[in-house]
Image (cartoon, rainbow, N blue to C red; front, top):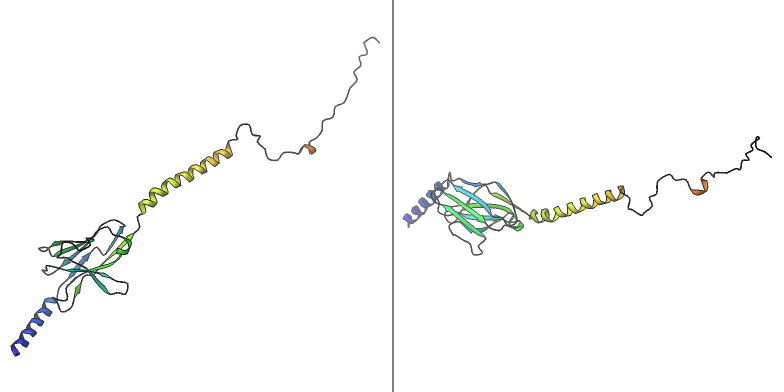
Length: 193
């Protein structure tokens, strides 16, 4: 029985020693995408590994396992892996990202292999709405508004034919000076009477 205890202690010490110096690097630190694009998150392990597990941070701060990199595809097909065992790189591909995919993603080594789980520095994924629809719908609206403004400006500058145009500062009819006419008698002295 003492051999079993000594063996377990040796295994424990070996696992503890193997955990020291393991570095897990993730990139990019932050990734901005629009809805419908594919997210590409990279993870590199300083020690030879054959699998990592990907986690997404929940609202309460806990981590929820979403994908294991040794698998080629998840059940729903949203998460895919790109694994290069010789380079110790593990990539997570999230297809057709939506706003609810926004969050912080971590790659980590399984706690079943190590005494405690090791995690990377995390990648923050930010998914924004599709601005293309707003751009393509908004651009014609802006053009129409500018056209309306131009037509209003031209309408004010150019009078329409057949319509009397009032000028400012006109004198009302009652206040117009009246012209008086007088009769003059012309007499010619040389003319016979």
